[in-house]
Image (cartoon, rainbow, N blue to C red; front, side, top):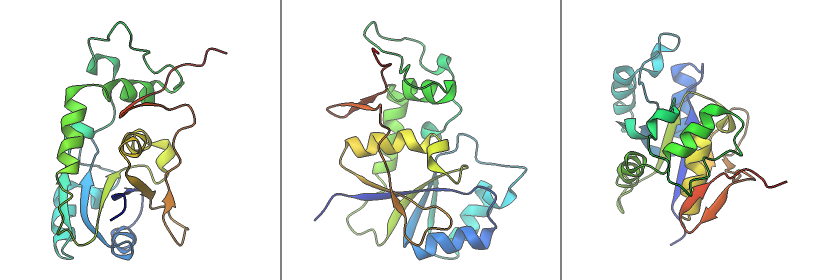
Length: 187
């Protein structure tokens, strides 16, 4: 038995039919919504209630894991440790704040909730879903690094590709056992 596989997808501005088609094509059994807020005025087809009902019609389970949601701020990690590098390799403040958030108990609880969905009798795959169609523009990228550090195979479902693409670990990610950080370069 190989390493466990998990997928990522962004609902973006896709129609419901296009989104559903990608899930079915990739044998997805569970959609784990990792948006902090599960509603959108711009894309009502991605709202929690619509998704739950629509996915259930195709035997796809829907879960909302708030603890993995993005839009984190520095205040979401109030007590930086003395040896905490604060993930300064990220120039984007949102990604840096999320990277800092990844060392909190709340984040680890969210990961545990996600991984508890993976049962031995699960037919199909789990996909983590956010908004961005391109995973490198989303906090899914950081979660994918975190899962990769735990020997998961992470595949990104992207429009226009015949097959999902294998997650490419962020070049400046530093793996220390199962901890992922993004320290600033000493250059």
